[in-house]
Image 1 (spheres, one colour):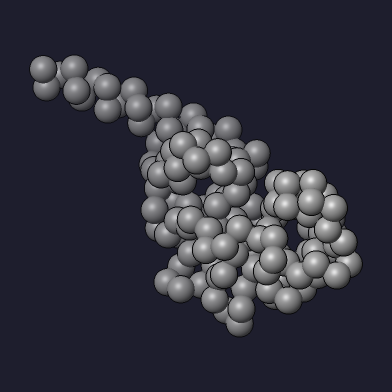
Image 2 (cartoon, one colour):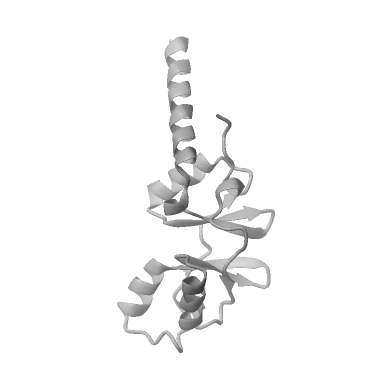
Length: 144
């Protein structure tokens, strides 16, 4: 099975994005409307952050902030780690696991083209990663 690329497993075919000055309430409404757990925060076309369900829980609700008046820029994860669209999805999965990320923006040149969500990775992607590990192990054994 061929190596899958990050661009092939993004959560949707359009980006759910908000501006840094959007209210948390507007960001959460956008997440609910699009049935997703994160929104990317863009200033023009430049990715400046990501706002996730975890940010909502730990930075807004736990701190008793008002979602109607709190701007996303105040509670987002700034400058999130990203992955290039042409990178193997296995690299994204590995990094997401190491850092306990649930979401990772996918970039093509300087633009965010989508988000990889851990819960939306197709079984086939995981299976192809397992196949790749078996192939590498077999190759290592033969080289010994």
